[in-house]
Length: 405
Ligand code: AMP
Ligand code: MG
Image (cartoon, rainbow, N blue to C red; front, side):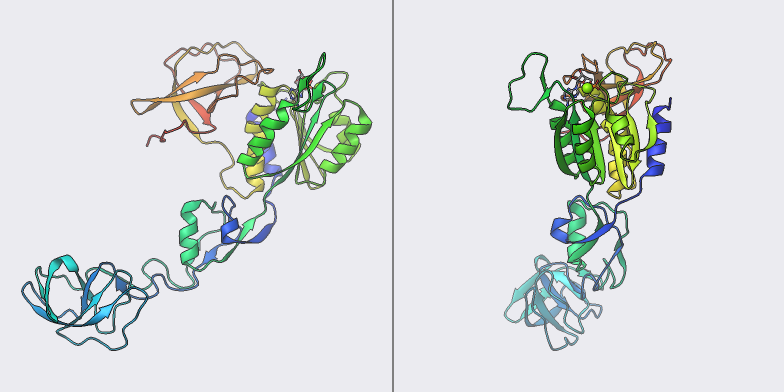
């Protein structure tokens, strides 16, 4: 049986980014650049004033010197004639410096009367001027391929003229729940029935990852219906099933996949929860057969499917960030398989405290709700005492928190 690390490594060796597509910049939030973006022009496009003030040709002027004001230049305008020594122009922030001028004094540093200004402080040559191309030069790489586009990237790309960008396509993920006992939300469960809650958790999680969800509903535990839905799912980039991958008499997912050309990557990982995880591919479609137990399907999603989805979407860092934390309660040892415990984070004195959720049973939805991190507990370890320093896989930051430096 593979370990967590071996299984993740195998997945990351298998998965390559999806094809690229062109999008208007405004539709590309959350995507990853498939190609570098180069600047269409110099930024700033011309030497311009960094202050509301007066621009003039510097010639060693000191405090007390007077300059003749030759006009007014707001942002968006330009001045045709060149300034001579002893002349200044009133200039607003962002307006291009008139020819001949090279230095700006802020409004606050002059006394204006009639058509002249008197310098109140001695200026430095070239002060308060933003130079043409100082931020970017035409043809320069603004952002390299592989850059994820967050809000912070949008401003610089727009300023550089990137009206459309080439980004990696969004993974389309078909989501199929399997189980005779399942009913959809909205139906009242009869005897022996439960609501298909996995769909709702996974669909939401996929949306958080920027994926397009293709709902395939519920397949009963019989080969015919399962086969038809799996065939539809194989048109997506990823087919994700839940349930029916263990060793039960009604667990038909794997054999149904095999009948449709499934190439096995692995079945079963030495972890708890989530041991029955199935991974492989049918043609170009990646297949994740997640276990049915809610905490097991959620954990295997985080540990194995999320890295694959991020790799598909072009991210260079598919694994969760690791965070050093202090355990608030003891964690029992003595398990053969590596365990992953759901839990919450709180900040105290610049350190993060990790508290495992009370109910870690793989059948529980409770343990996942509110969780911000997963604690890996190595197989064969003894009890880990309260106060120990450990590393967790960060799923999301607690509200209002910052990552310590
Ligand atoms: P299985 O992996 O099919 O043996 O299912 C294991 C456990 O998970 C059973 O108790 C199922 O009822 C439960 N389960 C399976 N699928 C779902 C689902 N979609 N939503 C909630 N629980 C499920
Ligand atoms: Mg089942």
